[in-house]
Amino acid sequence: MELYTERGFDQTTVADIAERAGLTKRTFFRHYADKRDVLFAGVGPLRELVVRTVAEAPAGLPPFAVVSLVFEAAAEQLHAAPDIVKMRQAVIDAHLELRERELVKLATLTESVTEALRERGHDEWLARLVAETGMAAFRVAFARWIADGAGGSLTETVRESMRVLAATVAAG
Image 1 (cartoon, helix red, strand yellow):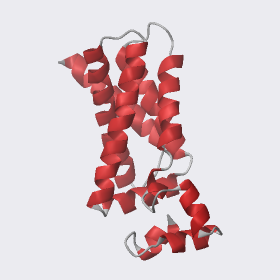
Image 2: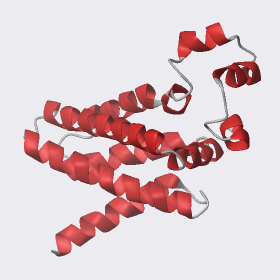
Image 3: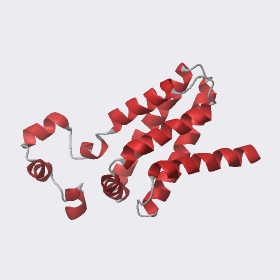
């Protein structure tokens, strides 16, 4: 992330990344397909977290409440390294290709949440609706957290976003 911030994404090479990490290029390619993969390496553990959170949510909890727990857990994981998250997002925001890949990553996570809700016994369309809505609220909260200089708790910002959305919908 430091290299991308210092030199820019386009000017940073795999050789630069490997050297900074104390690796050979060969070792780099054992872990990543290309330099973009460095930005998206955390999607596997994040997917596991969201699926586990749905599965472990208390029985009888309404679907949107489950989704709120999911995105709060995701926020908690991301907030563990706020400076890196902020740098990563700045790199992604500066490149259309990376923004597109980020959208694919988020769509994949949303599908994982949808499938996990279906496994809890929820109807496919309800599961999709609450997963997509939850992801939209998460994205807005994340953007707000970044815009605020990544200060405060991402988890609290996400929780507030979910609360406001739920209250707005309930108010009709």
